[in-house]
Length: 114
Image 1 (cartoon, rainbow, N blue to C red):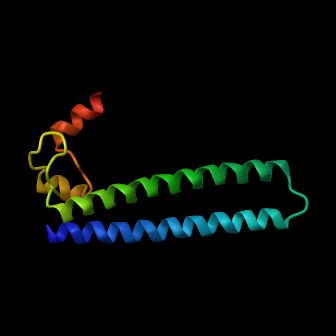
Image 2 (image 1 turned 90 degrees about the horizontal axis):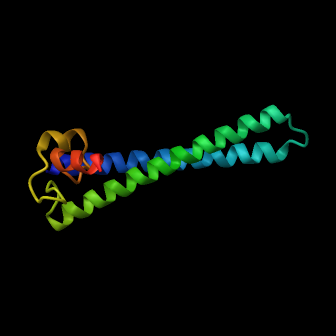
Image 3 (image 1 turned 45 degrees about the vertical axis):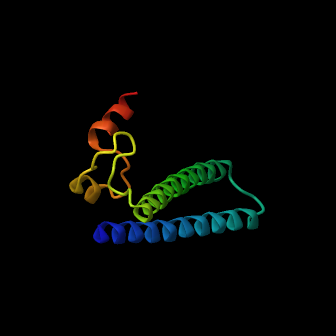
C-alpha cells in the first residue's frame, strides 16, 4: 500500500503544480488582454473560448485533487482499498490503474448505470 500512497502523493503534487501553472497562464492572458486598448472581436472570442477551456481544465484538476485527498484520508483511517459501497477489496490492479478509486469494479459499474 505504501507504493500506492506514494503514487497518490505524486499525482497530487503534479496536479497542484499543473493547476498553479494554469492559473498563472490565465492571469497572464487577462493581463495581456487588459493591456491592449483595441482588440479584434475575433481575438476576443478566441480568448473567451480559451479562458472557458482553461477554467474547465482547472475545475477537472481540482476535482481530481479532491479525490486524491479523499483517498489519502482513507489511507490514514485504514479503509483505503475497501469499496465504499460493499466493503469488499477494490483490488490491487484497479488501485494501481486508478489509485483514488473508492469503489470496486462491480459497484462502480452499478453507480455508473444509475
